[in-house]
Length: 414
Image 1 (cartoon, rainbow, N blue to C red):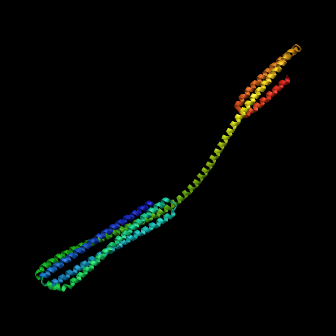
Image 2 (cartoon, rainbow, N blue to C red):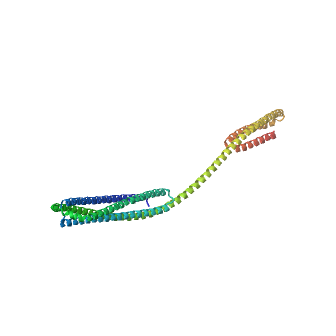
């Protein structure tokens, strides 16, 4: 059921309650008018009695005047009783209709309460519906309090009716007292013969007043009937509206049930997606930790490689210096030996002239070999700078081996 429509239903019930309150106020006003009418009639009766007292003091009492007074008294009593009966009938009808309206409102409130309980059981997991239902329940409690106040206000006409009943008993007592005084009045009426015409005029005037009162009562009765008819029409329209609202409530209940099922499916999908997202986040955290570990390992490896490279470079420079020194020593020894060879060759030149050309070729070969060693060392240095540590180590080892082999070969050739 839609919460907005429930709020509109409660507002409609408040509006109906205000209308009932207006109707009760109207009935109270009419009751006050009836009370005023009764007071007016009572005052007129008192005036008639005072006029009769004056006439009794001034005139005698014939039988016609006594009959006329009796008839007037009976008509007035009938008018009072008829007005009282109509008033009681109107009050009972108004009370019955108010009771029916109150029962209809209470029945609607009970239906709404049952529907709210059902909605609250079906949608117990939705915090917004709980908040809204609590607000609606508070409004219903306020409405119940207002209905209680309305019941208290409806008790006020009962007290007024009791007061009017007490007044009616007092009027009856006064009428009985007047009846007890009737013999004395009859004796005193014998003195009013000279003023009979005045009494007849007074009776005609009272008759006209009674006729006016009857016309007013007839109009009032017509107005009450019109009001009853209009209220019957309003009640039928209200019943039709309540039936339409009940149908709409049923449709809204069905839609609410479908929405609840849809919300459950969405909640399940949300939980699945949340679980998947949690898995992804957990995997991402593990991957991030692994990446950090790998980065740390890479950093440590780079530092270790840089340290090893610095150590190897220092060692290589030491080895290169040592190799250079050993090579210089070897060359110096070679030069010494070569000088010895030259001296020996010069000594043997005269002895072995045919070997001069061979020695020249050997000397050129040695010079070319030295140049080749030099170029090879430079190429290895360039290649070492390009290829890295491992190739440099391999090239250096190869060069050292080649240099040692070359030296050994030179020594052997020498």
